[in-house]
Length: 149
Image 1 (cartoon, helix red, strand yellow):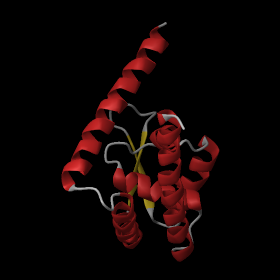
Image 2: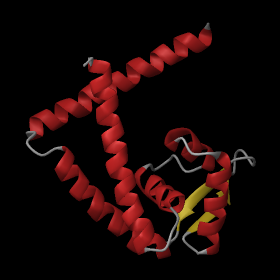
Image 3: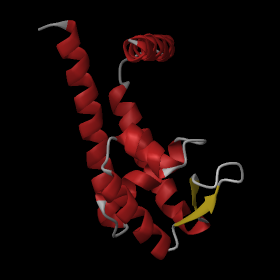
């Protein structure tokens, strides 16, 4: 099997485990999977707090994100605030009512982290983070070059 296939399988398995964890959260707190995903995303990605960020980085449809955001606002788990510099941009914030869900996500993510990194030394984990950052930079540079033409 090629290295690219190995990378893709690893990514897919991590995503599958994360989705399974979020399904547990959604069932426990009577949320849709998209709602749980949005709460997790906003908690884990400070500064990436718009619906467009969620659509781009989680690869969800605009319609599903919009519907879930409205539902979370109705459930008092989320609020929105217009950007002061760009009135077209709307920032999303978790409310204090979302904190029990956030804590449950953190507990489950810690368990998932233990599973993923079982058998890897702290040094290996740090190397993986460094290598992943370099790969992300390389890929972003390649995308930028392609877009420039």
